[in-house]
Length: 228
Image (tube, rainbow, N blue to C red; front, side, top):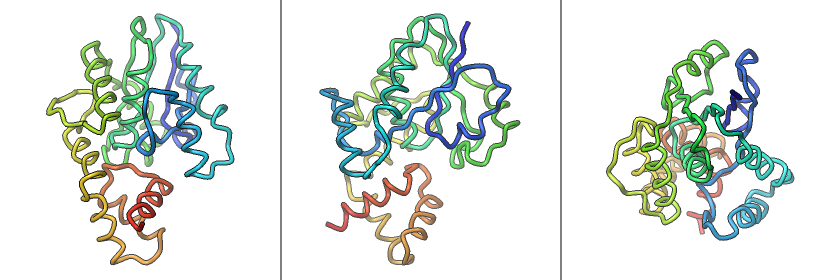
């Protein structure tokens, strides 16, 4: 039986325990921002990233090839998803669960010990312990997560459901709604009144509102959008 570890981003890969068996696949997307329509999905994502993030790196190499690796996972494998609890990571996680034909594989989610800090402050020993505490994702949970992705695509994540795999679902639903109802804009503007540099704004934002999980590029784009 082959083992695969799907990591959300390169940071975790740099300190991933070397003695954990399995192939590492890295998911490098930011689906929290931009078009997520099913039609021409990756072409639209590629165009959006190029136009809005001024990325010089190859989207085909960094995203599409890694996605193809996931699609090519053999049946009867074990797949471990290392995704944090914030909205940024969870949206990526929802997409992968909904997109993949993993019906004949065992899939698991590895949970960070701290929902706010994620894997960031974990060492190899911590990560090994988290791996051994991974929880298998049942068929019913797969369906629920797939529905969450479909709802996210329609800007309509509003179901009052609970999930043992998506731990803080109610908080995530509120955070997603905040992107459209003016709350996020007010949260950012409130910080801007107290902080001068973007670096300081970014630091305070992530301390006060870790549920979003935005990177510096996402926060800067939201600031630019609200300033128009």
